[in-house]
Amino acid sequence: MKHMTLTVPDHLNLNETETKRFLAAKLYESGKLSLGQAAELAGLSKIAFSEILSDYGVSLVNYPPTDVKKDAAQF
Image (spheres, rainbow, N blue to C red):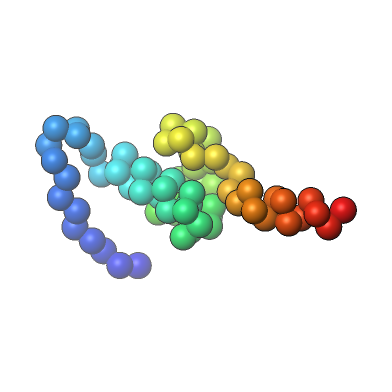
């Protein structure tokens, strides 16, 4: 795994754990990471990570609407 150093403004009052969880949630939302990969980045189990997704405005169901329409058209 690659290590990175990130500088954030002091006024954001973010700690390392909170920043990792936010980043993991947004990478999951964008489809860059699977649920398991994002949970690992956040330092949580899959269940615990799925429970905090809503804190970051991210849905657990990560299924694009275009795919839903495509799948529905098959029936």
